[in-house]
Image (cartoon, rainbow, N blue to C red; front, side, top):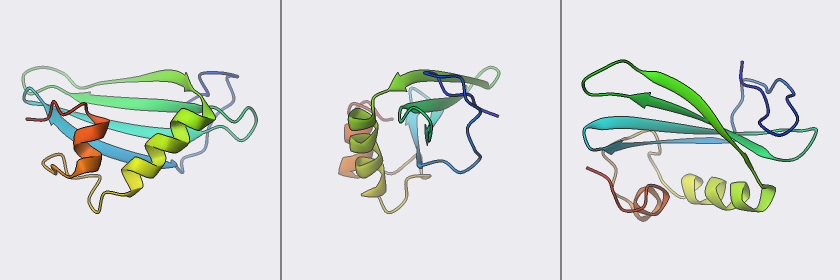
Length: 99
């Protein structure tokens, strides 16, 4: 279970949003969790390497304002799970660096 990067609280299994993208042959899936205690976001990142082992790590804390903006961006994509999607939301989220 993911812990809040700000206060350490165990976060639930229901993410606020998730998005996947391909970068240099690897797949990145970023899942945003909102902490109900402190109001910050924690991002769980799954890095599936084309050649190598999969890793999972967290980053954050992400402020409520920045996290809400990313959640809105992710939700504007009709297929956020599709690593091959090239919609404006995917391009913006991944810095226009998609495969």
